[in-house]
Length: 269
View 1 (cartoon, one colour):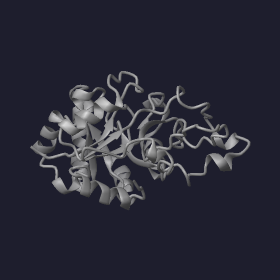
View 2 (tube, rainbow, N blue to C red):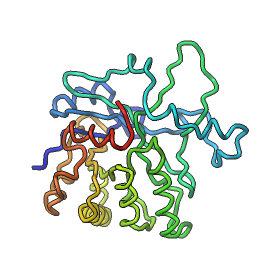
View 3 (cartoon, helix red, strand yellow):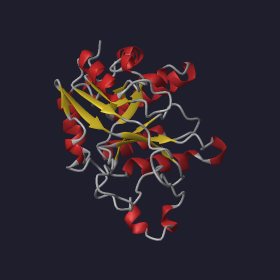
View 4 (cartoon, rainbow, N blue to C red):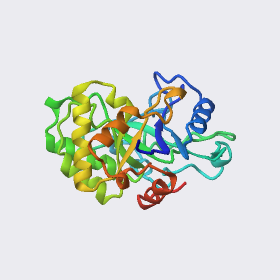
């Protein structure tokens, strides 16, 4: 069995369909023997005040495009959220939909002009960018979809692309993953994707084989919606074994390999 000691995509009650609390997930991660656990609930209209479709039309577009303070938690926030529990390191990321053909992410880059004493403003350690369900194949060519993904993953706040096999959009696998490789960023595959049927599993296999051929790293995650799924990847591990996916290309196989590559991609803990 391929060893995967870090789970970079898990969810709590703050995700639609999420069934567990942060503490329940942490306890499950400890029980599963994980070295690192990330919680990645989504950005949505429930947690941000506004989401302009075209941020460049805002009065102060320069402030919305300022990425200098959004790649990690602020120092004072690190004292509020636990970072290490019983030997498990914790990261706090999020998933965010790609909501424009240019690769703009929902809810990202908001200036946050309203702040009151005692407020805690969440700044994610990293983002997993996902293709929004609004994009249909007839609306976007393969070349345009490929560029949309490349634009999204080029954002310094985005660590990796997720749900690539769940969309009907056509894109150039080789061009996209080569862009990820040049940015030192992995492609994400999660266990929940392989539960969606044979067609999706075949897409996942194609993507994994292409990553192996192009020497591109992946993150193999659970996508857990409840605590009992934390660290559980039976289908994905079997798939990786069947295609003889190189162990050295699994970024989250252990905490040392993950953090080395996390830092190379420009992120910090």
